[in-house]
Length: 122
Image (cartoon, rainbow, N blue to C red):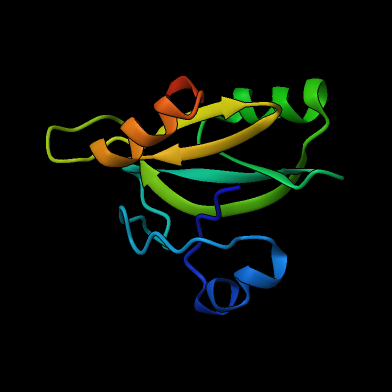
């Protein structure tokens, strides 16, 4: 599972919730809304705890209606449109779970592990 958070408290207690690897700060997001940013919605599916972050409102609504995710509000804010200076974050899927990658090393490792790329999420 991948935990993306802007909360120091949540990061500090992540191991108790099944997050055992710390990948540091692979990319930056905003905690403040802005006209040029989109809210990345956090959705969680129980009981497996799969977490998915979706900045696209119709896609988030569909995940709730069709796949049983629960909306947990805005996790952070991301660029609304691709820009040359912005590093894309890609979402991957495997065995009913999602993970995210932004560096070539991460992408290579999870691709070799059989994760399927769903595309640039933000």
